[in-house]
Image (cartoon, rainbow, N blue to C red):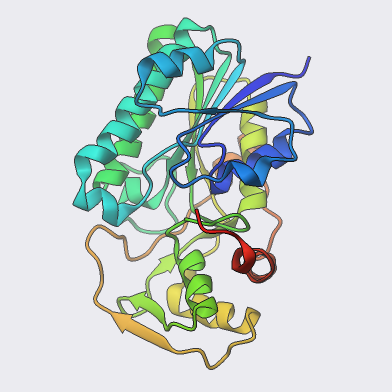
Length: 313
């Protein structure tokens, strides 16, 4: 029987892409989103119930979890620099909000809980590739909040038997990234605004860039997982320097001479990060298929065709 899904943050970047994929396999989809950055207009043509609300509201969370089989928890305060500026807000959204959802999931007999976590922000400066056996050493309140969420997922499996899967996303990019603060989005927006690309540091720092379509497939695989609580890195498994990324994006956009400006490094950001995906491959049968160049082309096409003509939020 098709399952009933709740997607928190379902009107955001990843949520919008996931819901578009989920409609082909779900019995029913309910979205819970406070719409501060998400755009419900992007899902107008899809059969999904959209419930406005905040995961910090315990009563509202309890109501929205009622009647669902699987919770996919994407809603979060996600920006590293913002978490340094306001760690309390980051804690309230990412830790207390997650706790509210876990408690409601237990009360409502939810079958599975999928938690959107992160890789580099949790593990800090570690020899790459990072993997699930490394000791966490977060460098920012954002990383600490996601580590706390993972801990509560483990605890709710141990204490209540709630099967949870924590997915440590790498740097995800792709269409519908309206408000995302990631480097790919920022570079494309600056090109379209005729502003220099800004690189913090010397550009030799590395990240693991994952196309959102591959991420959505990983989430669906996690929904089919039948084991105990687990943590998986979901990434491309490839390392890319930010300066190299800038050149690739300029080439894809047809702007090879677009200027680049270097500024001082920012606190709380790791220098080198990419992930081993061996565990996800072996247990979830996860296998990303979108090469960076292809994913960047898809993303540029969306930005140039849609983003420029979209109304302001």
